[in-house]
Image 1 (spheres, rainbow, N blue to C red):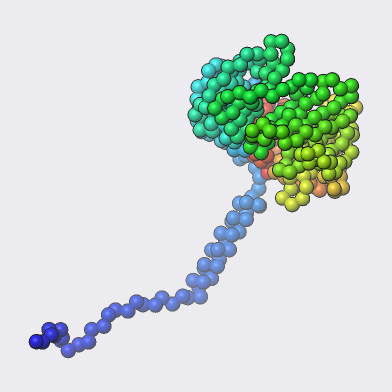
Image 2: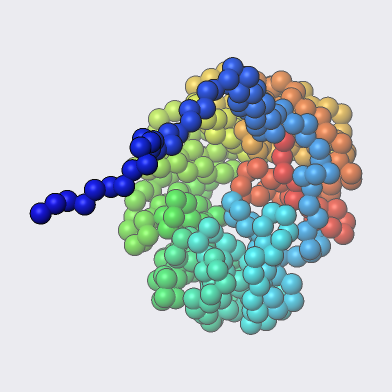
Length: 377
């Protein structure tokens, strides 16, 4: 036997080898320059690009008398018998038909409710109707949790009741006997709070009650001798802003710290990335009816207070984007939390009213015939 032989022409065949490309120094320098330029452009776009009001101001598709609200990224409003959801550039996400005209609206990040005097309709964040519920009596207001709704109802007898609706629309009543509801709502999902006054007490006695999603009591905090201006909730404690003191309190009622704020009216707070919340106040008492605001007080419970003298004709102050903002006629001014002015911007109109927006990065501004959202610098 023999094995077949490969034919050969006497020349040795070579496989072509891959040619190695030598990296030239100019190539490395070009790559470095392009990377540095891209980084510089990114820094400019994020941090250094000049802020222009006209590029960040959006007129909304309704007037100042409309029913509307916001979450962190969505604007909800009703017109006629339609419920609309849009982004903060007024670009519509969806719309759906409601049972009647002019329904009021409440929303959380997971659901939205519209309500008349006698009916509540609950939708998920994608416009699907979850349920509709009829009530006897007059609905005063509605608050949305992630899956639950709380409905404040005035009976024909003149008494009030609070009804919690679960994910299927089943109702659970909360007793309000002897109490006057000042405020209520949801914090951190379906955790419910009630801010009530003792209707039988001779002196002001405020109560903060908290409940989990199953309506089990998680705390009862009594504030004696003063009224509450606001409550700010955190995972393991809350801040109660009273007429006399600012308190840091645990949910079981343990007072951790306090500061005297008598004579000052609360209007907002910001949470710095590092550090405790900074609360903002304007003069109250005899000065609360003044046409213009003269001073803003920024304070935390452990730090020194910052007092900022306002510009002439300052009518509005608010917190957002980790800063203090003021509006004097048609000029928007920003300050950092040390009281240093960081920017001044001309608005195209003098707003008649401002509206808080859930994201904290925007503010609502209204004139006599229009509503706008302004993305803050």
